[in-house]
Image (cartoon, rainbow, N blue to C red; front, side, top):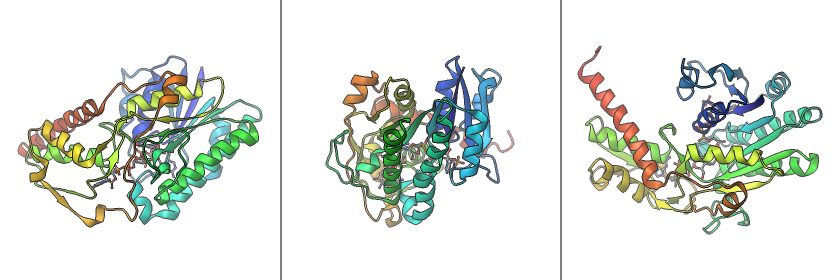
Length: 338
Ligand code: NAP
Ligand code: G4F
């Protein structure tokens, strides 16, 4: 039985990765969770359900990337074979408001975890995956691939770049099996509500059901290479199954603007977004990343990875999910207590 440790298991990617690994009969999955005043385990609750495959192989532990002692203790307790570092303050706009906190959790948090992994690796081989980000490319011209120089444009991106280089340094200095996946934007019905795709699919469907009148947005000109999170966690796992550790870009190779996203999501519920969208300065960033478009040739050739869900399929999946949520909310409002 292989033991995997996931930081960020309560997040979008953590929940898909846990599901993916538990779907394999030879994995025990350990997730790191933070103490919070109320439980926020909605994305992984179903994994503990009576019919969930591997529910008896899933374990949660309290720890925090800000707390080196908790990471060291967990590493010794679990002695994982694979560590997936997905935990982060992952919102770019928020990182401008909380730059030091973001740097601590995203940058130093990764270093704390790498130290704990390095110590364990002295007597138990561990493979490490770092969730690097296409945000590290920032203003570098598209398309961005493994040889594109980085030019980060936010406190979040700078912190991710620090973590990225530490991961490479631990591989080179200590011979650690450490991989960095430079993942372009990936989304799903489990995406946090304040990221642009989910904000738009929630907004369009709630407007359709009469639960909301307007949608207030920031910059509509930027472009992103959006894929499906379920496809991207497969790439993370594949990286750790190779003979040699390396870094990979994971992307769809297609890019769309926020206008395109609005047009697609509202179009799926037969609405014209131009009738409903307002602008507010507060959603703008002090420095923006204009165009992200990834070149995932290496992931395709070496890992045999390719995305299975395209932009249309992704937005449709999210709209279908959010339409169902909106209909349930409307029903509950119309028939309270039913
Ligand atoms: P997400 O939904 O925001 O999830 C972030 C996770 O990190 C949550 O489980 C959160 O726990 C946890 N976390 C936050 N602060 C922590 C701390 N101090 N200690 C331990 N855990 C902490 O993010 P995601 O979209 O799944 O992304 C996963 C990773 O990939 C992140 O590192 C992100 O930066 C990176 N990434 C994401 C994308 C993308 O497009 N999604 C692209 C490239 C890279 P709580 O539930 O307790 O808040
Ligand atoms: O959905 P976003 O907030 O994602 P962003 O900034 O690209 O970051 C995401 O992807 C990164 C990978 O490239 C991850 F590393 C990171 O953790 C995160 O998952 O914004 C996308 C674009 C931006 O250009 C933003 O300015 O949408 C634009 N936008 C326009 N109006 C908006 C809004 N973004 C948000 N969140 N909210 C708006 O109202």
